[in-house]
Image (cartoon, rainbow, N blue to C red):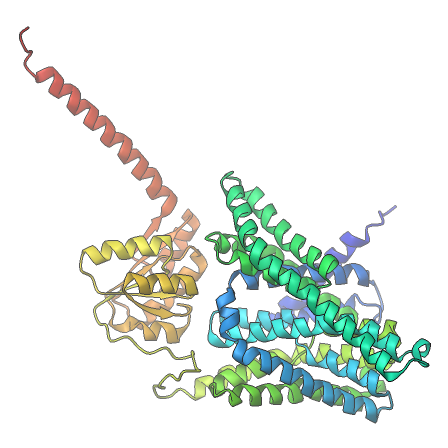
Length: 573
């Protein structure tokens, strides 16, 4: 008799079918996200066959959102957040207002009423965190200006949605049948009190994270790292991410995503932030897949036949209305056309907060079930279409660059090309890269560093060398470092696979380039050698040999001292 294990069954069915359909989508040169969403439809309640537990899938997906936002916070400092507030705050608020008005107009056209239209419009105004961050991470744009603006935009949207979720019960109470006899002033006062209370709780949470968490969380992880147990460190990182997110939701009514983001952000100032990010990466990816599966499970395909015009109108609000508003706002701040297109494309979808708002709206009888069905249909279709926008943007960007482009203040796509020639390029300015730079400086070598982490970029600039900020796998970054005119290349990053891709691309630009790479295993050494690296240094092996050399040198010195003592003439007493 089979065991009743809905949690295991949901995970196995979700990830298993997502893998099969994701691999098929990849084979057809589509985004794997398409396969993950289809997997959710397959195991959902609206298709025949096995039906996974929707509630469990949704909770598992929430873990993915927590880990994802924690990882974003690890690479997003408070300085970055404040740097983009000029664009992100008015941009997000303006887009929310415009999208909500468009949703309200559609609601009135369908005869739902003003309150239902406001909830419906709000649900269409907020982008999916998972979808947006996946798109930016795949293109390695998280550390670019547009990446920071998009994340800041998301944080503002999350804060607005937190306020909306708390205000909805007050709205239902103020306009429900029980409050029919209450005056308009009393109703407004109820809403204002709820708003003040919510803003106060959010402010207290942020203050605690910045004043207390910024000291305690890095200190705790540092103490755990001193234990020498990588397993314990990994557990500590997960406990912090999940614990802060859960505590923020329970104690302060802040979303899981926002709580996890601030936990990561306060840890970003620590030297352990990079290790914390790498430790959470595998689980983050696995649970992110379950998020898309859970979205697919909510979708009833029959709505495409029963209400095609309403579905089309909803979809147009999401992918055209929101995008147009975002584009106009970004351009109004005199940022580049490329930045405006990228941000507007990334926001042309809806996700997790939309489902939560729809659920609360239904529970409080603020909008009809048909509105929730349209929100789900709009979410599925917009998530499916969104990767196509980025493909189009990539092609437009490629076509628009037949000649060198002079970089503008708002466009970080084309860093200026260095004037250095016959120089040495160091990829990665962490502990290894900085030691290497110090040795090269003593030799009087002209050098340049490529680095994508902002804190390491600042370190390289303080060191006094030229820096190209960006991902060294991107052709534009290698071109900016003048790889064709370089003599030597040191690949000092710890990831062997990424290092191999860099070696291949650098060799294609300059076949005579002398390349030295870093590895952590024999398999990485073999991989880098096949990619074309001339010399590979494995850190662990060099440390072992250096330790042996130290011991051998000590023995030699001891023998020399002993021989000197034996040959020294004795002094008569």
